[in-house]
Image (tube, rainbow, N blue to C red; front, side, top):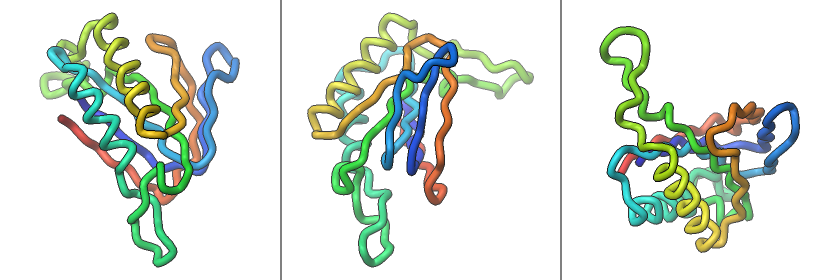
Length: 145
C-alpha cells in the first residue's frame, strides 16, 4: 500500500464536470493498493495520515497533524501509484490490486481515518476525475507500507 499526501489550502474533485468532493485546509491523499495488501495495512495508513505532522505550529515548525489543525482529507484512489515504467515507456500496472479488493481497502482506509476523528471526502472509485488543488508549501509526503 502506498500513499502520496499533499498539504493543501483547498481542493475540489469533479466527475463529468459536476462537483463531487471539496475540502478546505487539509491533505489530498492519493491512495494506491498493491496486490496482497490487507485491511491491517489500510488501518495503519489511515493512522499515519491522521498523525502525519506536516502543518506548522506557532513557531513555524511542522509539528501539527491534520487532526490538530481541524483539517480535512480528500482521499483519492489511484492505482497508477503502482505503475512500473522501468521497462520501456508504457507503465505496467500488474502490481496494482484488482478493482474489487482495491475499492474495499480504499473504503476501509476512509473509515479508519474517520475513526481517527478526521473528516474525509472521497473521490469516485474507477472514475475519470479532475482534481483542482492549491498546494500549500508545497509539502508532499510519500509513504509505502
